Image (tube, rainbow, N blue to C red):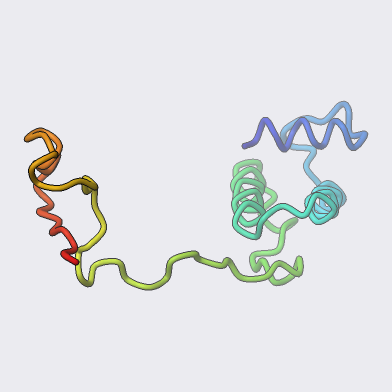
Length: 119
C-alpha cells in the first residue's frame, strides 16, 4: 500500500521525497487524486489508514485528520448484511434423479449436511 502511495505521489510531481518529508499538501493531493479516481469508500479508508500509519511512524501524526469525515468520505456499504445462517440451505447440490446420480455426486463434500429442496 505504501508503495502505491509513494508511486502516486511521484506521479503527482513530488519526485524527491523522503519518508519524513510527508506534509499536508501531499495528503491533500492524494485525497484529491483518489476522489477523481472514484475509488470505493473502503479502499479510500484503507489508504488513509496507511497514510496515518506512515505519518505516525515519522512523528507527524498531526498532519492528517483523525476522522475520515474531514475528507468528505462516506460510510462503507456492506453487501449481504442479512444473516445467511438461517435455514442453512446454501450448498452444493446435484441436479438429477436419485437413479441417475452417481454416489460420489450425491454425497456431500463436507459435513454441512445441506438438505435438498424437494418439489
